[in-house]
Structure formats: structure tokens, C-alpha cells
Amino acid sequence: MLKGHQSWLFENKPFIRSTATVVGPFEGRGPLAKDFDIVHGESMMGQKSWEKAEKVLIEEAAKLAIENAGLTKEQVQFYIGGDLMNQIISSSFAARTLSIPYLGVFGACSTSMESLALAANLVNSGSAKFVLAGTCSHDSSAEKQFRYPTEYGSQKPPTAQYTVTGAGAAIISMEGDGPVVTSATIGRVIDMGIKDPFNMGAAMAPAAVDTIEAHVRDLGIEPGYYDLIVTGDLAKVGYEIACKLFKKHNFPIEQTEYSDCGMMIYDYETQMVQAGASGCGCSAVVTYGHLLNRMRRGELKRILVVATGALLSPISFQQGESIPCIAHAVSIEAGREIL
Amino acid sequence: MIFLWAFLVGGAICVFGQFCFDVLKLTPAHTMTLLVVLGAIVDGIGWYDPLIEFAGAGASVPITSFGNALVHGALQELKSNGWIGIITGIFEVTSAGISAAIIFSFLAALFVKPKG
Image (cartoon, rainbow over all chains, first blue to last red; front, side, top):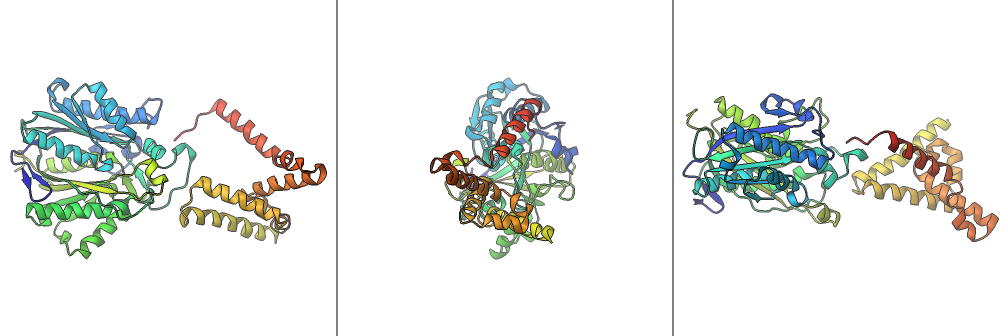
């Protein structure tokens, strides 16, 4: 049901019936390691290319999510997915293996919540019984496509972010139990004129702020409604900019705890990640792994996940275009088993 | 004293490269090309040899020295063989470096694969 200007309220309360997270070795050395279902020992995943390795991540996450939901893939009506690769090959190639009717979406790193919002909407409206939403990213394939191949050994400035090697997937359904997807806010594209692909956090922060403010306005709630509001992958630089923007707009973010998935997954002391983490996989594995685990343990009752995406292409930034950004917010609340 | 000058001059060239990366936002390829071209121009007006005399490896090790070597060879051959020397002389001084790069990278490619 449309609520306000750009939000959906899911009055039938679709559940996140199951989740699965698969990550690479670097994420396995981070502070959230125990929240992930599969941690790979090497970042090639036994494949011949980084792109093939990335596809393996989402295939494994999708299969595990279906298994965890106690389903077979034939019972899942739709798979909504996307990733960072040109023509979203990781998701489309995984859909070829899964052979589930497929909707490919591109929202860069906001894909995690874009796919979850669409999946929840399909289930809420009765268009599907079980929908799989998932996304993935790989550090080496993203560096190769958007910056320089990692084999080249190029320098990174301190504003740069480390793309998460990982995939997260979830099954959304009206049947069963689990955390409830209660509402979603679809973001506008915001472009503040930043052109540096090594400074994505700064480019995306205004989009995140815009979506969070729109969400609160549309639903007629206060930020304090949530125990936790997390942005997807702004990392240190973008997080600070977002905090300043909230202050400038007199937005009472201090009512709640505000954090960023890009600052949670790695250890700044021991892992060389510059400003923090990024990538489709970042908000996906932190949300589906760490945050939902905390919710299942009863530590969190209501969270708002605001996945942020930089909608640039390798061609557009080489031609000097600025980076348009987007953010999608999904509200997740503890299900019956908690409340 | 030569060590101090080598450090200062070599370091200054590297600082200029870092400036190109961080402030001018040039790509690594653009930065490298710019430094090679600058080295070539400086030698063209006859200042690179005095710089090497003054700062030693501080001037001969950075990539600017490659531009210097290209022009140096061409000018040498121009003097001894006339105009055709500009074409035949470009790799006169640098051939050892270029051949070594080709041979060693070939050998490296035979035995190991790059890792990301």
C-alpha cells in the first residue's frame, strides 16, 4: 500500500523466512565472522576468474537460503537479484543455474534493499508465495571493473573503500515466521557533483539522508521508532557527512542509534580498508547475517536498513561525469517469535 | 652530500607524482607519461645531465630519467648520423632497460601468475 509520497507499507506483514550469507577470507577475519554461514578460505573460490568466483558466492547463498527455508527451488516463484558487474552477470548467471523465474535489478550497492523491498511487495500483494532476494559483490572483480585490477597494485587514497567479497540472500514469504518486513521507502537519485570513484561515501551520503528523511515523513514516525538505523556502505567519510547533514537539517537522528554497515564488517586496526567497506555484499551480509542474528537474539526490535548505491559506470566516470547516487530503505521488525 | 641531494631531488620528483595523483586526480598512466615527457623536455634543453651530476641516482632512478634517456639517444645519433638518427637513436641509451624489461617479464610470466 502506498504511504506518503514514496513509501510502501506492507500491511500483510511478509516475513524474512530464511537468510544465508557467504563471504570471502578477508571478511572471515573481521569482527562479524561468526555471523556468516559460509566463510571461504580463498578469494578465487576454486574458479578461474574473479567474476566466476563472484557468481559462486551468490549461487551458494541462494541455495542455502532456499535450504534454510525448508523449500526446494521449484517452490520459489521469483528470484530478484542484481550486482555490480556490467549487465549484472553474476545474478543472471546464477539465475541460469537456479532456473527460478528471474527479475534482474540494478541499484549498485543499494540492490540489497531494492531487491528486498520488491520481494516484500510481491509477497504482500499476493503476486507470489516465496520470493528469493539476493545480491553479491567481489572485491577483485569490482576493482577491476571500476578502478584498477588488483594485480596491478595501484595506490588507494584514504577515502577509498574495500568492496566486500560476499553474498547475502533471503526468502520472503507470508508463511512461517521470522523478522517482518513492515515498510520500504524507494529513494530518489541524488547527484551532488562528486566525480571521484575513490570517494563513493561522500557521493552517496546525501542520497541516504534524503531517503531516511523521506521515510520518516511518509510514515509519520520519529527516528526514535527504530532501535537502529544503518546505512549501507557510506564508511567513515560518508558517515561523517551524513551526520553533518542530519544536524544541518535539524533531523533528530540522536533519538536512535545510527551506524553504517561499511564501518562494521572490518577491523580498522588490523585490516587495511581505508575508509571502510562497500559493495552490494556489504549491506546484504551485515543485514542478513549480523543484524538479523541480533534481532533473533532479541537485542533489536526495529531496524531501518538504508542501502546506498553509486550509479556510475566505468565509461561514465572516465568521461568525467559526476556520480548519481541512490538509497533505498527497508524497515525490519522482530517477528512473532520475539514479540 | 651527494646522498642528501639524491634524497631531496629524487624525493621531490616523487612528491610531484603523488601531487598528480592526489590533487590533480590524474591516473597512474597519465602521471607516468607526464613525468617521462617532462624528463624528455628537461634533457632537450640540456638541463638533465647537470641534474644527474648534482643529484646522482636522485635524478637517474625516477621515471623522468627514461624521458631523458630517450631524448639523449636521439640527440647523440642526430649529431653522428644526421636526421635519421632521431629515429634510430631513441632507443640507443634505453635499449638495455627495455630489453631487460621484456626478457624478465617474459620469464616471470612463464613461471608465475599475478595474484589479486
